[in-house]
Amino acid sequence: MAPYRLMGIVNVTPDSFSDGGRFLAPADALEHARALAAEGADMLDIGAESTRPGAEPVAAEEELRRALPVLEALAGAGLGAELSIDTTKAAGAAAAIEAGARVVNDVSALRGDPAMAGVVAASGVRCCLMHMLGEPRTMQLHPRYEGDVVDEVKAFLEERLAFAVAAGIAEERIMLDPGIGFGKTVEHNLALLGRLDELCTLGRPILIGTSRKRFLGVLGARAHGLTEPLPADRRQPGTLATCVLAFERGASIFRVHEVAAAAEALAVAAATLGADGR
Ligand code: HH2
Image (cartoon, rainbow, N blue to C red):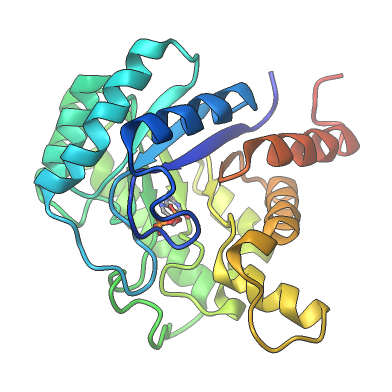
């Protein structure tokens, strides 16, 4: 088995930053999810609320209206990929679990809804706890850390892990994520990726989501002497570079839009590091 897992992104939203509106119709989301599974996705992360900078929150009913038909169809499709729900709302998580989700990906790390920890604990599913500074509507306005960003993110994840365990979520079911792009400048993201090994000492699998994010557009533009960030559809080389480096520094779950390309890049990285069991 590969020493990493690929989480394919299925955004059932009108406004996601890179693919908003493309998979809003359940049939389109389904076809997309099938394609990602065929490309090698171990997990499919269904998101019905955009968390891009500036995004407005979506009501629980609307989130469910978008996500449930897709989850139900995927659960019945037997694709072999584990289903994950990207939500901060306990009602959304509970309904998704009922429909077949086995992972709750909570970008608020159980802070968004006081009932969320109980839902995850009682159902026995796995969960991802992510660091975010502030909230999506305002998080990228002036991200500032009092001290060292890596130390602060690590302390936050350590506290959230303890909170989750105290709430009854078994430690072995928890993944941690530094939240690339969530209240972070380009430099913050680079520091977190460069020193990812420091987060691995928390003892839980580290999930990384760099796919098509803006800082890659900024860095990619610099490579070409451009001032405007490259658009999302030109951030694939940067996405792969960060996945490979994050793997080398200990990350083991990669949340990506383009699964086939990440699968290839990580297979080469693992073979080069002698980590592919061959
Ligand atoms: N990033 C996004 C959404 N959910 N979850 C985790 N655990 N880690 C991430 O880095 C992460 C996440 C944002 O990406 P995307 O889903 O493509 O965009 P949007 O939020 O606009 O739908």
